[in-house]
Length: 304
Image (cartoon, rainbow, N blue to C red; front, side, top):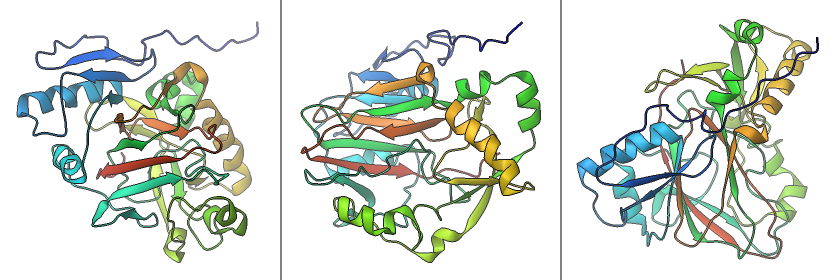
């Protein structure tokens, strides 16, 4: 009998217990992950009770969305402090006067998108970010959606045999293929076709760190697949040939359409995602349009 992959049940990515929210409205956005949050204006101080419910929605739905937010740099940082300290990206430029707020820009003449592959943010560091808050400051009239993929479900959909093989295996992560002097963003081709997002190549991008292939979420206790195409460069203790076939399968397995959510941006939209159990991807389908995003990233801990 030919084995068939089990189907993903809509809603399987969400916690089975429905939370009783008293101060906000939480509306699921897609079956695999994502929810819209209503009833809060994060441009103003937010009460402790509302923050606690936002945190719960964040854990329940992996990525949460806000609409119609008139955000300023200081109000964005005031909101972000409720979730942790701020990460400053080592290779990407920031908003003037606000080093914590990364600028992600695609100009009308740019051909390439910044971060044009599925990935989790900054897994090339020993303590990757907890999550990121991305604000749509200037969005195209059409296109430019951000996709999110549920890595809990990516792990759950593996066979028991494959899960057993991955237990105890560690992956090697590095920014060498992206931000080094020999990396993609330093290439003449990329520099000629993307001028929007300010990027600095550096030899420190060649540093390598080790993370488990299967990560246990520190707050939910759930297991998630934790490899991604740009930053996972090998498997500890394996040759390049041995690890290549495993990683090629896993990075493809991790982003199947059934476990994804596609978020449509509007002016004033904000997405806040859990970097510990999600991958994301920015679509480059808006030629001739300008897209400006602010990203505030929250520090995380060492994956276990």
